[in-house]
Image (cartoon, rainbow, N blue to C red):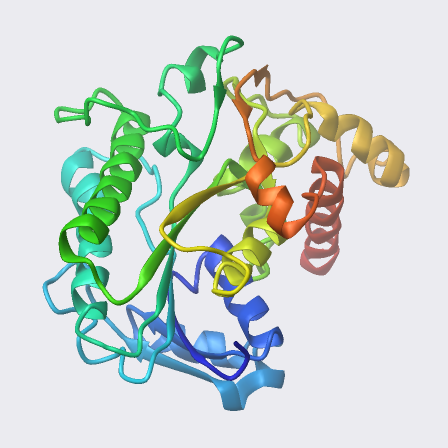
Length: 337
C-alpha cells in the first residue's frame, strides 16, 4: 500500500523508469539500485522524480549477479520490482553476457529477499518470449494461443545459435529459477511474473531523437523513418500498461501471488504506424520529418491476456503508444534543431 518501501532494479531502463515514476505517483517510497553513483544522481535530478524527492533514494549495487548483492540494501523493504536483466544486444559470448546474468540476477535477489522478513511480494519482469517458442518469433504461429501459464520444455541448453536464442533462454531459465525457488524454499513472499510483448512507448530518459528508435521501439519507429526491420510478431504492450500492471501487482488484496500475467494490447499490425502518423501528424509526414517508406512486417502470435484485463481493465492500444512515441520523437528533433 502507499507509504510502503519498494526496492527496484533496472530503474534507469525503458520499462524500469516508467515503473519507478508510477510507484512514486502512487505514493510508494522507492529505493532504486544503480550500478554507479552518477546514475542515482541522474534519477534524483529528473523532472519526473523531483516532485517526490523525499520518497526516493538510490543505492549503488555494482554487480547484481554476485552472491549477497542485495543483502545490505533490502532493510525495511515490503515489495520488490526486479526489472534489471540483459537485453538481446549482439555478443560474442551470449552465455556470459546474457543468459547467466539474467539467471543470477534473479536468484541473487531471491536469496537476499528471503533473509528479510518484511518482504511480502516480488514482481519480476519476464517476457512473452519466455513461454512462446522461439520459432514463432521468426515465422509466426497461426495455430496456437499462448497463455501466461504456458511453459517451454525441455529447458534450453547452450550453445546458443543466435542472440535471440540466448535472450529467450535467459527469460525461460530465469522464470524457471523463480518458480523453483517458490516450490523449494517456500519463502515468506510471493512472486508475480510480468510477461510483456514488444514494449512500445516513449522512454522518458531519452534526450536526443536518435535514442527514440532504440530497443523495443525500433520496430515501431522503423516504418516512420524509412527503415526496414526483420519481420516480428505483432504482439505489443504499451509502456503505460506495462508499468501500471507492474505497480498494480503489488496490491496483495487485488492480485493473488505466485502467478504470471501477459501485458498484451489489442490486435494490430506493425506497419499501422504509418496510418497513425498520417492521421495524427500530417504536417510532419508532409515536410519529411516522418518520411515513412520503411516497414516492419508482422508475424502472427496470439497471446491470451484475458486474465490481465479481468483484473486491470482493458489494455491501451498500439495507436495510443505510437502517438506518444511520435510526439517525443518530434519534440526531441525540434530541440536538437
